[in-house]
Length: 192
Image (cartoon, rainbow, N blue to C red; front, top):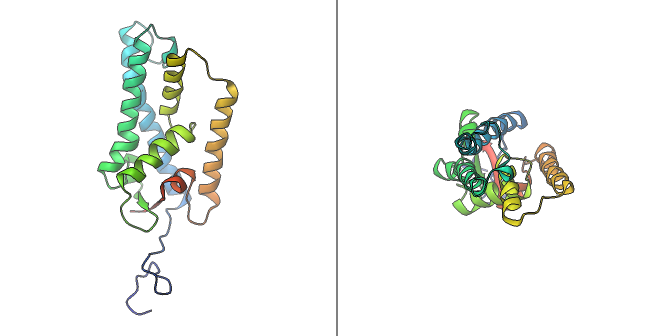
């Protein structure tokens, strides 16, 4: 139809059909973000560990002397939240990895993803439901162990890993490239 967007308005619909970012570009952005996010999360924990005379590589906050495990966990979780949630909100749906690889998170209709959608995607979807996807999940589990005194069973880790794998499968095999956290939030990752 004359005057319609090349990306594809369909039969009088005002919504654009967006092309998802390629599997490899998005995967590389995720790998970069996984590393940087894990580093951001672990640095405050390493600082607290060193203040206690522990190795900076000791990230098992549930074994820290009380209340330092709690302090380290909260600081690590806040650092992870800043990287995974606040940075995309402040940078038009991009983390450092997404910016480097020229992809960004948008609403399914093509507009900017709202702060609520980004929080649902990044915090609820990636950090809590897909627990194996990001380093902050380990900190959350450690904080739960500190707060309750109960060690999470091995099957809980297996379930978290299985959900993460299912999300990766959705991303790999869905035509629109949307993973579980995208489906929850009404978002997708496209070329920037």
